[in-house]
Length: 145
Ligand SMILES: [Cu+2]
Image 1: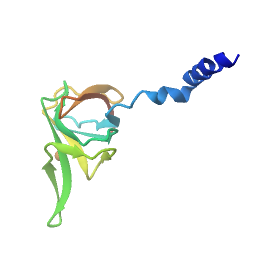
Image 2 (image 1 turned 90 degrees about the horizontal axis):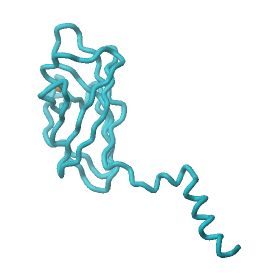
Image 3 (image 1 turned 90 degrees about the vertical axis):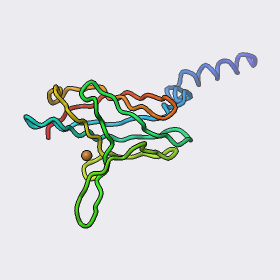
Image 4 (image 1 turned 180 degrees about the vertical axis):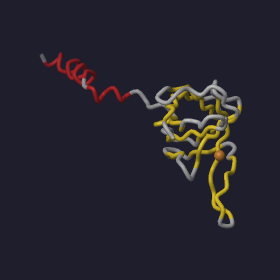
């Protein structure tokens, strides 16, 4: 009996749901990506999301890809001389284990020349490409404005 204890304990641990976390999390994850629906005739869309760096290294966001737009930029709203202005952010860096919320009034993605946006409730794929070649694909949900 004693000889069996080891393997049985190991097997029980393996079967516990919590033990699935032994696989490391993705280095970068994206949560709750949404795009407010575009008004008719408008071709510049905004995307909000939460970006998380789960790794112990700094990550740098270099490129964004989507079938919806050939030109996607990271922007940040800043106050300058009492005015709210938008500034492109190139090579956005995220500290180890840091999260960054893209939200109204702060960071956001801008998609230019959007021709065929999906209707409200539908999704489209957005690919975030980081330095070193890491690519993270997330689904962006179109929501009402
Ligand atoms: Cu912008």
